[in-house]
Structure formats: structure tokens, C-alpha cells
Image 1 (cartoon, rainbow, N blue to C red):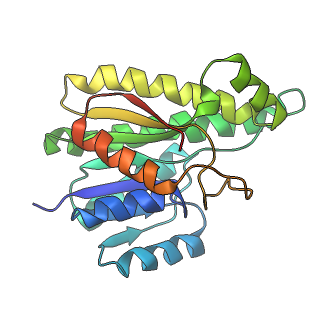
Image 2: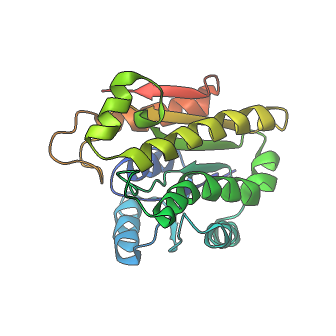
Image 3: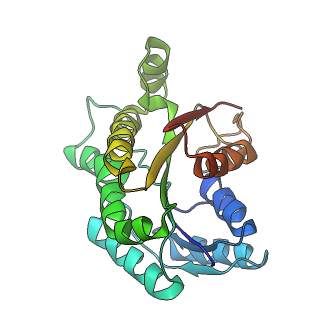
Length: 230
């Protein structure tokens, strides 16, 4: 039976590579992000590779928008086997001057949206027997003096907080859903991915490494958190 993967926070880097990898395994793909023109361009690239794609705009920071997208994807493709959460907000770079609204959006994008999507997709994920929630996270969310220094240096304080909260949410969801037969795991990207939205010309991580790490995470279903640094 054909399987379906839903991707929220679609972009040209990690999530496109994940869509290609799962699509190559016969998955149909549903993709969402706010910019409809970029979304449709991505859909065409995936379709050119023979992948069945449903694309619809959605705001990852808005739980109602996320839930609506999940419902549309289900109606279009059928039951959801995998949810890939790839959304993050690079706001509130300096906590001393950041408005509260930016911090709220950071949290809503990284955590509230993820939980809303998981809740909406959960009946399908449980029915799939091998359902999974796969999350893109970043090394700025981990503890350590060197990491915190980098967060401050690159004015990524909001992102660091958002990633840390998402990291904890993944671990809690993994424990909560283990008995339900749904796997939850994350790839912690320990740097910048070449060609991705955050690439300023000095990225060091090959997107194919992240792509394969996600597929292994789904297939092996052992580690909740896996770090990729090259």
C-alpha cells in the first residue's frame, strides 16, 4: 500500500531532500510553507522526478492553519504515515531588544505548531503501525559554553531558545507515543546546510547527509536524537 509523508516548513534544503528521499521510496508527498510561489516551484521539481505531490500554503506558527493543512493533505492523499516538521523562526536575535511578539512566534513555530500537527495527524499515524514524527532541529538548542557563545555571536538567541524547546518536546512526545506505536525522533543539524535557507556561503553540511539520516531514523527507529555535522 502506498504511503504518505506530510512536510510542514518546506524549503529548498533539508525538507526538499527529505521529500525526494521518501518519494524515491514510493511515498506521496504533501508540502506546506507560507510562500505559495516557492511552494509551487518545489512541487514542480518533485513532480518532475515522478513523485506525487500535494502542495498548499500554511503558516507553521498558526496551529489552526497547520491543522487545516493536515486535513487537506489527508483528503487529497489518504492516511498520513509520516509527519516531517521542518519549521523554525529565526527571530528575536538579541533577547535584550527583541519584542515579545517575536519570541511568541519563535515558540509557536518550533513547538506549538509541531504539537498541533502531531495531534491532527495522530489517528493516521497510529493506524499506520509504523507511523513517525520526524523533526528537524539545530545544534543551537543544545547546552554548552561554545554553543551559547555562538548563539550570542550570531544573534540567534531566539532560534537557540526555540530549538531547545523543540528538542525537549521531541523527547517528551517520543516517550508519550512509544506505547502507541508511533516513533518520534529528530535530526540535530550541527551547523549550516549547503544550499539551505541559512547558507551564507560558508555552509559545511551536505544536505544528502541529513537526507539519509532522516530516512535511517525512520527505518531503524532506535535513537530519538541524532546529530549530523558533515
